[in-house]
Length: 342
Image (cartoon, rainbow, N blue to C red):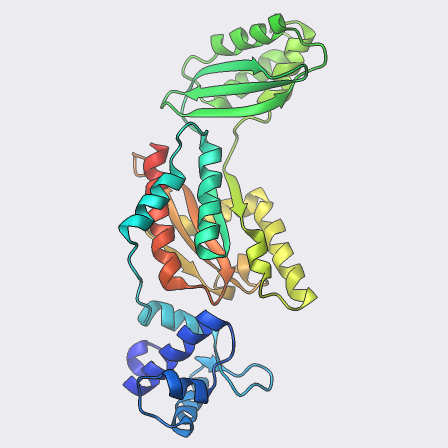
């Protein structure tokens, strides 16, 4: 069914029901509609229109309630045919820019802040898929933080900086730490992290590397954990539990996040975002990944300067998401992160 197949009276009643449901999460009755609707209709007339919308598969009656809720098909019709997407104010745009700025943070910290921001603005779970780094490495440095910890600073050829704390082998001297730094930097030569890892591992395995044992241990143990793929950052998990009543629904939400943590599902999310340009909206079971949990997702890819899709940002929430509010937030955030990546 298309929205054009509904007459003006049915379209108005349907819109009022969905918008009220999005605000309250509760079934909407005819008496409520008669008070808020712009149509001069009695509750009895509204009930007749609601019955027609039920027959059309756009509404349903939960349990024994006298009110009605939109079906998944109804929500899709609303999003595609009726929804009026709001514009962000200049103040909101400036706030998103500031929250996504690097400003002394490494990339993962900036993207984590972006995920937290999306969660806060939507009151749902915010999600960012951070890109894997394919840029050649320019420099690597180890900075000791204590007896058994060090900070690894990785600078890529495109100017991005990654910092991460690592555990040091017991008894590793400052001289060995410097030796590891010199060894790695001597083998960079414009290679990506993945290429360098492969070459160094081969050298270590064949005992060609002229290093002491502790230096070898440092390199072998830590290059395995550097880079290697997309990272999923999710903030605001608890927001999805606010409307959960049954233990069964709680388990479904938990299962969703367990699934998202699996690397293959991160790839699926990125593939969903890559299917065309702009914001994608998946309602309930339209996407197998979310079918069990009864949640919806709004997701948008972001691109680098070569117009390659390298990651995605989005929001996961109940099917009664405030679509008009969240869609422009996700869209603008994706654009800002794309600029930040470059």
